[in-house]
Length: 113
Length: 115
Image 1 (cartoon, rainbow over the protein chains, first blue to last red):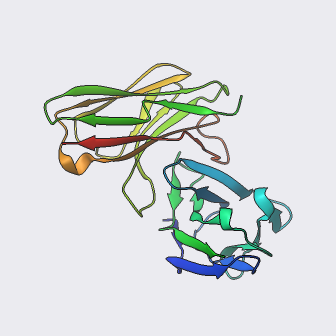
Image 2 (image 1 turned 180 degrees about the horizontal axis):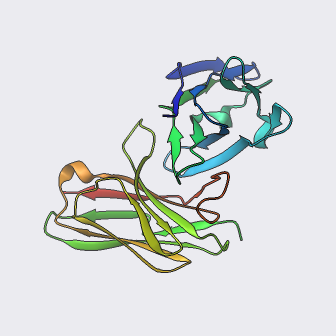
Image 3 (image 1 turned 180 degrees about the vertical axis):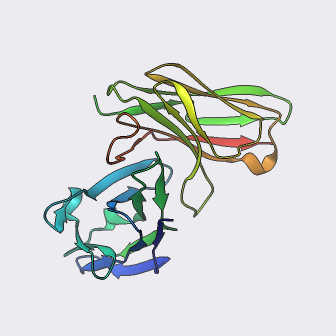
């Protein structure tokens, strides 16, 4: 069975500092990986996705992620965060045999001025 | 149009009420989903419709009744809910089921409070 682990429940960071949100997955088949962001009282918005090809994936709002098959990781990074990046971030893996997205428990990114 | 819309935005209902949540997409997607999300938790899958047929029911209580009138619309009928059903209900859609990936587009959600 596929699963996703987000080890950090909260990540506090100062504005303009770099940030990395960690995501590890387990899967016995080819994976398709996603990062979603959820701002307060809103739905989920897709930040980026890895389907195949280049392991470095660029997304919206200056975020990027690197797929590392040997470490089964898909960490999200941003070189310089803004106050507006304060939100909940969910890593997810798609099960190709069903219609399900398997979500991690989420990481709360809190950006301080 | 890459948007999933949901109405109402907020809903307060008593335990004896009957209400419905509505979801609409015009992206030509053939799979639609209902999720329930409690505070500080990831979304939990409730139902999946594929080509307007119910394909997944994650053992959801019968007080939640989904309906897919056509490929663009998805309803969730609510009856005799409990206070613990209070949550954010999210609708999502994706390309036809069985596709090799599952990029889901989410709506803004309906914030439900059961008194």
